[in-house]
Length: 215
Image (cartoon, rainbow, N blue to C red; front, side):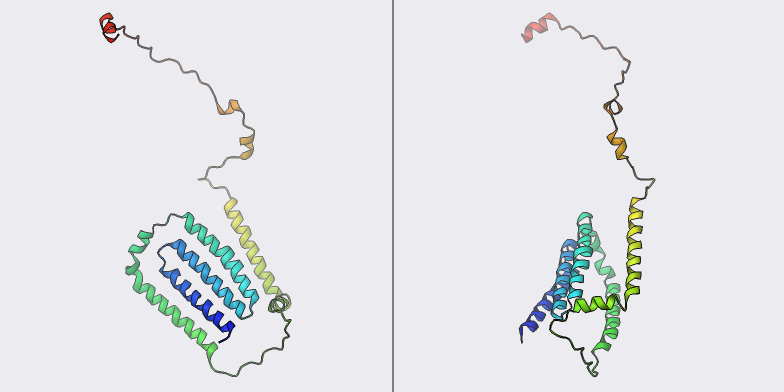
């Protein structure tokens, strides 16, 4: 067994452990961190297969953006973990059935790629050939229009998300910062003279004997 095979088994073992801990961890923050670990191991396996573009995309897109966002959301939300565990065994048969159905569908699709057939002859490539360079040439020549359509769709989604967050809602309080800067002291504090509604009661004088006793 060479070094590459040993690294593959190492990364695969850590990946399976992290994936198992994602669904068994009691704390959702730990589950998100184990998912980040699983993504890193999958990226390392992609590197062993000389798929550098897929490896760096997995790290930048999923680990750097999606999982960090999920982690911050989970940490900021006050999730009642005990309440979520109460209905686990109640919904377990349905979840197990759905999981088994998804596993069968994935097996039916993926088993077609493992059937014995005549291997395709690989393209001749030199030692200085870069997969990322070849992928970039393919994307920006043959698949240029689908790439531009995907970019426009993402741009529209970004603009729509910004527009939804910047719109004014009637049920939210809004203060203009310019009005806060131009405010003066007399606008903040106003002295109001309140008329007396009840006269102060006179203080009763203490007897002289009581005063001498206290002395």
